[in-house]
Length: 205
Image (cartoon, rainbow, N blue to C red):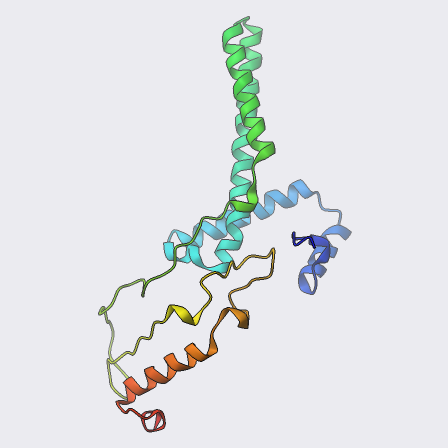
């Protein structure tokens, strides 16, 4: 069975958006430019202030659209410049220069036609702890034990092989990608640490 993404199989709100775009006969090139600009602005506005946001699903979804748009601009811009230089060199009867610019034009055209955008997202390294490091409190402590924060970490709680991509619907929030038993044990251990009792019920009380 072919697991490739098919836009015609969209359902719900996405299907309605797709139908609206088709009914309005919007030029695909215009739509590509609009989504490319929007994705680029969204990616940069989210990642530049806080680079760790590059791991967020919404940002990772915008990354291939942004990279495809940038590749398109670079290739089209490169082809335009190379062709202009080629015609100028040809008009001046400079054969060597003309040949060089023709080769550059062919390379840029090849990049434009063969770029594989399906693998344009960068690989994400697994996290090994809180991104701001341990023992860096700020503000005024509140709660049953002011200033005490319980942190629980167990990589087995989630599926490290989750792809989180649209091709196979392997989203991070699918129940199959979380081990509820491990998560329950983490919550139980955290409540016991906070309450200071070995019994869960007594610690909760």
